[in-house]
Length: 502
Ligand SMILES: [Fe+2]
Image (cartoon, rainbow, N blue to C red; front, side, top):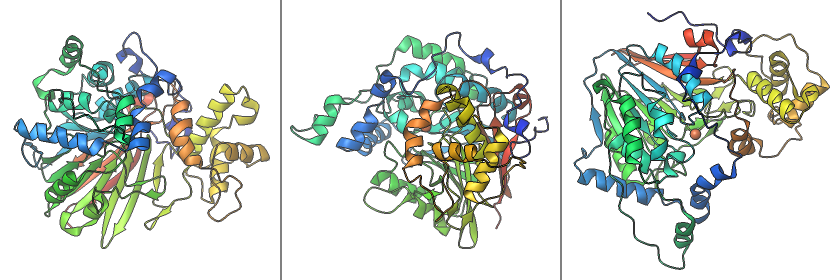
């Protein structure tokens, strides 16, 4: 039986992990020598260069994906890339995103994940299985080892980082696919030729190392082969549809046609994507090559999607969007292990009819601001300026955004706390006077958050458990702070129950 959950970060600062009396046992699971992934390291940036090359010289992902898909079909994958399981009408599964940095924040999720995954039939990873480049040779410490005690299959959709390796590692591990033969050489001179010149090729598998890694999840109950980087799982009363959004966040024409096909019909559906559709208060419908969007399909009543869950942004967010007479739950679940993306830079939410009273995020903006304040205080040796208590941070967020604090606070807003909030990119009220007009969120997402990884609690990680019955779907977001008490009884940070019989 599962323990009763601890108080959440909405209820107490201890629930957020600020009063961590004892760190968790997750360090016992880690390898003896751990390489903390640093996004400030020039080597990491160089290995991830395909991201910039795709932006500058055109993204080859759609063409490469077509080649992978053709190879899979040639090898006998089912044409509709469906995975038919024998799940009963009532069962549960796990879901998390952006897992694979292989350091403390990833392992800190594992004990709570294992605790809450008891009795679940499978797990899904939504994007970025392996950082920084999806290398086949890094699956040992970043996938097989952390989840070796999860006694059920794990399926995944790739994220942009998995594509920085041409998807070679992902296809080998999840689809058992052999390497792709070299593609044709681009004509000279062309943008594609320039891109090719600097492009990072997939790592060549070190077979001995891979076999050793695979032996960590070799029990029959753990085995699964997926047909490709996108797939549809028929699991009990629901169909879970996973799409591959590549490097730039769109899908290719053929995948779009496939998505329209597998989405038809009244069976309730859940979309799992590498790029969330609603995130940070903004709408990203996800373009399909040659026209249309993924969200048009999600919103189509004939397809009966009830939820769309995306990774990519490393925190948890929830937007219950009214579409006609239905509510579709749009979720971000990228807190599965990698560095935390800031939530305190999310402006007051007002998107698709979802306002602050219905929006949820984890970590709370106040906790996130306190986290960054302490970090910058330490780094810049200016604790006297930057260090905020979580109460002070919650108070200044509440004032700046014009919203009630999510957790009660008695702290007053001072000139210093306002200055820190401004320096750290807390947006002002909509239409209010704010001098901070820089592209703060983008700067945070691309540079400041990756450079602000923390390896000690509170770590503000999260994962989901989904309980399915013929009548309903219950989705819970659990926190993993890195504290022992939260490993034993993970706090529930959000919960939604969706009726499937409407
Ligand atoms: Fe990611």
